[in-house]
Image 1 (spheres, rainbow, N blue to C red):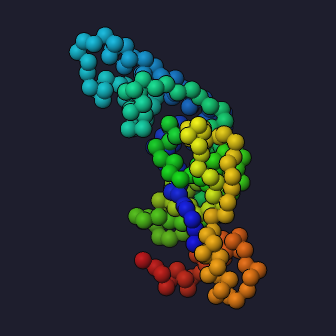
Image 2 (cartoon, helix red, strand yellow):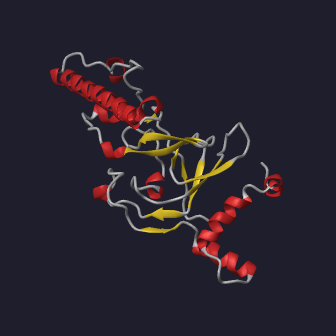
Image 3 (cartoon, one colour):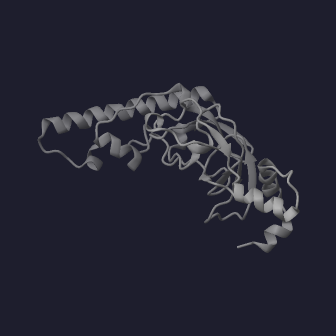
Length: 229
């Protein structure tokens, strides 16, 4: 039915990347990025000296009050890559059901953004996504619709099915999540539309109708019982 979908955003750094106060998110991220860049400089100085170079994991400062390290940050640090704080990266996100927070949406500082740039390529991009519990969820099936970037655990292990898809960014803008919005298309496939029109023998069904039909069906007790895992 859907041409593509995405997991919710996983930051692995919620304490820095998320907050109910936009100013606090900015302050936290500025401090963390400054600390990261300082570690890049320290590591580069040691490597330049060329004497008794330690293992990277034994060298960096793992102070959890300053940063949360993972492969997504250790790899660019080892290559000497520095980052700058981007005010435009702060955007609204659905952190938990009915709980909006501000998110620093960043390829560098979010552990996994998955296909989310095709759903929300810019801070102003319009979309709606149906979030459903993913594989491994322990709290049972649930579903919720939102027009904000969803956190992975907005609904446990959430998978997000969009109303719209945006074209993949070009090479020049691949690392800029907040460049001008690319071309938008319907996420519901032509094949799905044809199936619904043929089944109901009408031609007035739209792809948006199918999107909301799916959301309604996911709330049906009969449907949930019939297809329960």
